[in-house]
Image (tube, rainbow, N blue to C red; front, side, top):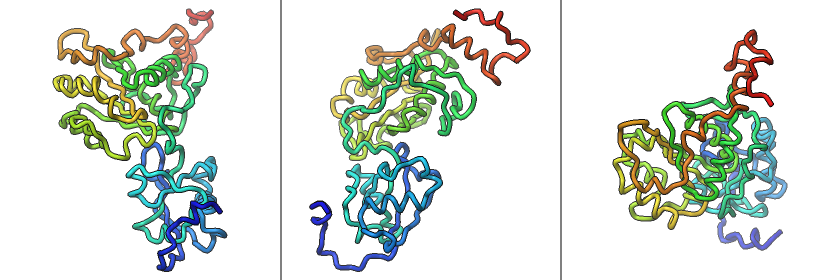
Length: 328
């Protein structure tokens, strides 16, 4: 056994609980994993009471919910406070003798990547060729539902992903109903597997500073809470045009946020491009890389794919090879 386990505080003399209490959490959201609740395993069932053996017991306890998860992909924290504070997960050989002794002090078992050692985005690249049909995750109310029939936008997704990797703050600006929310839903689906995605609506009556403060970022004072950036975090600022009057906020976000926030934090600013009239966007936003109206237009190939969709496309009786005007 390594020195890490041996160096654990031996001065504690209170007897260990016969149960090891724990709670499964989703790495992407920080919420209960698949609606699981606080539960326990018998401490005596752990042949050796260390994290590595405990993880295997957790997987056995949730054999259905964790059927596609390796025990090694479970990250264990001493309690909820440790996880929320952004502490590092405890190591595989750590002794559990005096941990998880009650529901209030339940161990936190995080399913998926926590980014404990992440400083820059190390997620697999999103490329046009790597994207395929998607299933199984929740989406924002607006835009497409990735659990149902929809059109993939692989080229647009790859372009957005590369822009975020290169610049960390990116704008999406195009007319209403052009596909911005749908693109965010698709991007959220792909990134939730390796990152924390936070969706903020600027239609809220609260100021942008207040909205960021709620998730632990104090832009006005250039500081952030410990849990910010402990894993890849993408913040969607949706319907940003509703807060364009807050020019000082947008100026600080563009000019100063990247200088003090961890490199693991990125922003996608989403706004409606007004064809005429309305409030113009703050000058500072004009310096950001952007995906605009032309980027959201369907290519000829995508148009054909949309028409061929079983439910949303053309009725079967209207489909024929002669209608495929854009085929090679």
